[in-house]
Amino acid sequence: MNATYKAMQVTAPGQLELVERPVPTPGPGEVLIRVEACGICGADAGVIEGMEKGVTYPRVPGHEVVGTIAAIGEAAPGYLRVGQRVGVGRLGGHCNECASCRQGLFNLCQNQPVTGSSRDGGYAEYMLARATGLVAIPDALSSLEAAPLLCAGIATFNALKKSRAQAGDTVVIQGLGGLGHLALQYANKMGFRVVAVGRGEDIAQEVSALGAHVYIDTHKKDAVTEIKALGGADVILTTLTDSEAVAPLVGALSPRGQLMVVGVGREPLPLPPGMMVGRELSVSGAITGTPYESEKTLDFSLLTRVKAWTEKLPLEQAPQAYQRMRSGKVKFRMVLVMTP
Image (cartoon, rainbow, N blue to C red; front, side, top):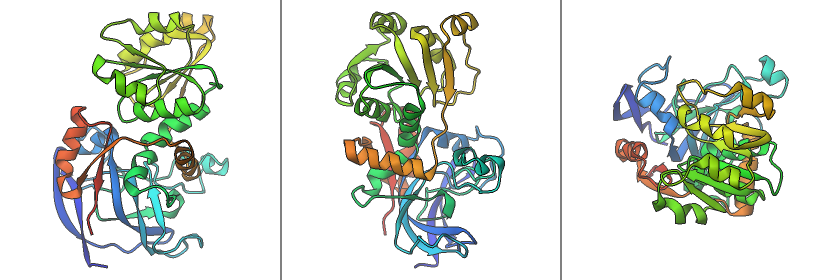
């Protein structure tokens, strides 16, 4: 192992720079990961562009991390070994002590680091991680394939599992980017009638290939009218962060329908109380998942051949990769790959 490693850090909002750092030693309950791939997520903008409060700079972003264990700290679980393939998502490892952990709600732990935000993430050749946040990566998945599933994958897979949708129900996916393209695949494989809501005829063929049975182009048609004509939606899963675009779609829900929110908008989500009460509608949020749930996501993805559509660039080109993601031109997930 070299004494130093390369990392792409944010020195101040808007400033990404490649630096060399000393390779750290894992502390108690930690491991050192030799990173092989790290997905670029829209949530990275919070750190990179300074939109997230409380971030200490410099900070290495990235929370879709896959690699191998290079070193293990004291008091780490005995099943871990050097060379083992592992991943880390946005939730950086539960504390096992807070009220949520005592209830087994590990994804709601209030004392866990946020990877790439409150602690350094995967835009680097090495990173430290809590052992409680580690996800086992199946041999059949390459690091490039697995990385996006540790955020975009688990977020949409778990949201659909936590929804009230049953096989044969109509499920609407709103937002057809990095999260949405995986949501379409999962919804199809779970046996739902999948309706995709997006903008532009140019993505119609891709949306169909990803598993949508119906595509509604909001440039041409009113989504609420079209969904109602199909009998209404049992569940709407929205990946958008634009609350104004999300709110009107609630009108397309069938009685006792459910809006599942995974896109974190900065503005409040306005909802019509009369409609909510009159139809007994509900709104639920879903925050990614535990390492165990991430492993189930990977297993399901392998079993049903769900794959993230990816583009890749080397670590040194992280600024260009990030800007391509922000431009909306990437189809559909950008991943940084590390070279030896």
